Image (tube, rainbow, N blue to C red; front, top):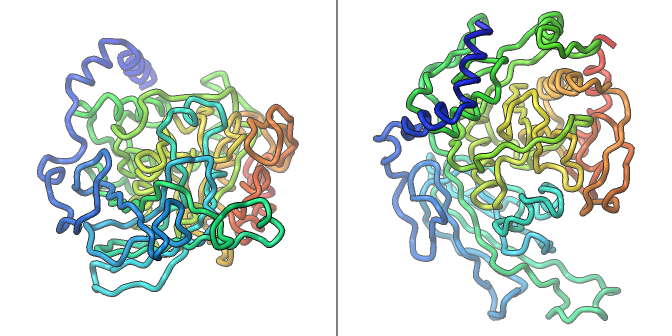
Length: 463
C-alpha cells in the first residue's frame, strides 16, 4: 500500500503527471448541473463579477445613497428591496481594504421556500482583523477589498440593505470635515450575494466503520488532484474524508515516517475539501507554507447560527467564494472549520497535517493555524460537540509540532494588529482571535470555553 502511495505521489510530482491531469481536466459538476439556471434574473443594477449566473455564483450589487445627499461617502446608503437570483449568504465589500467601515450594516431577505421577508439582521462590520499579514503577496495582490463578515441567510430570492454611518464623537469633530458629524462611508460599497451551488462530489459518504470513499480523479482538474494529493499518506487520492485514528495508531504512523512525538493527540476524522465540494478552480494554484504550527487561533465565523449541520458544507462553500471572489484572497482564510455538530472540515488547501499559511489572524498567520467554529457566539453558547472537536483537532495538530495545548509560546508580529511589526508576543498555544487583535471574535461565549479546550486537548495528548 505504501509503495502504491509513494508511486502515486511521484507521478503527481512529475511534470508528466501534472500534464496528464491537466489534459484530462473536466468540470467537477456534471454538464447538466453546470448549465442549470439558478433562478429568474435580477432586476436592473446587478452584475455578476467573474462568474456566470449559475448555481455556485456571486451577484454583486452597487450601493447608492438613500438620502438627498448624493455625494460619495454619503452617510446612508443601500439597496432598495428587490428581486434577485437565488443566494444563501450575503456580505458587503468596498474598494480599500485599509478603510474601516464605521457604521451599521443591516440586511433583510426573502426566503424562497415561504416568500416571507426576514426582519433586519446586522452584519458584523469590523472584519479587517481576518486578513493576510501586511506586506505579504496575498495582501498586496491588488485584488483585496474591505469587507464585513458574511451572513448565512438560507436560500433567498429577495434582498434589501441599508448602511448608516456612525456619528463622530464630540471630541473628534474638531479634526474632521465629515458632513453632519458622521463618519464617511467607504467608497465602492457593493452587496455580495453568494450561491454556494451543489458542490457535492459523486458517491455517498462512508459509514462509521468504512474506509474513506474515493471518487476517482482521472477526469478531474490538476488543481483538484493537487489539493487531494496534499493529504497523501493520510487518505487515498480522491477521498472525501480523512479517517480518525486512535492515539496509538497516530503515534505508530508517525514512527513509520520517522516523526515520532511523545505527546500527540489521536487524529480526528476530517472532511476534505473534496468532501465539502470545494471548486478548486477558484483559488490560487500554489500552496504556501510556514515552518511550523506553534499556536492555534480559535474564531467564530460570525455567519449566524441559523444553519443545520446538513447545510454546513454549503455554508463553507459560500464562505470560500466570499473570501476568494468577493474579498480577493488567494483561498479560504481559515485552516479548519468546525460545525455545531462537531464535524471538522479542511480549510485552506495544502494538506491538513502541514503548516499551511492562512489568512485568519492579522499579523499572526505565520507559524499558526486558524480554526473557525461556524456560527456567532457573542451571546449564544457553542455546542459541547464543537468545543470537543476543537480540543481533538488542536491536540493532534499542535502535537505534530511538539506543542503543549496548555502551554505558552512566542509568535513574531507581522504588524497591523495590537503589536508593532517584529515584536515577539507571548501567547497561549490555544488562543482566541481577540488575543492577537482588538476584536470581539471568537465571541464572549466561545472565548470562555478556551480554558476547557486547553485542558481537554492536553488530556488527549496524554499529558
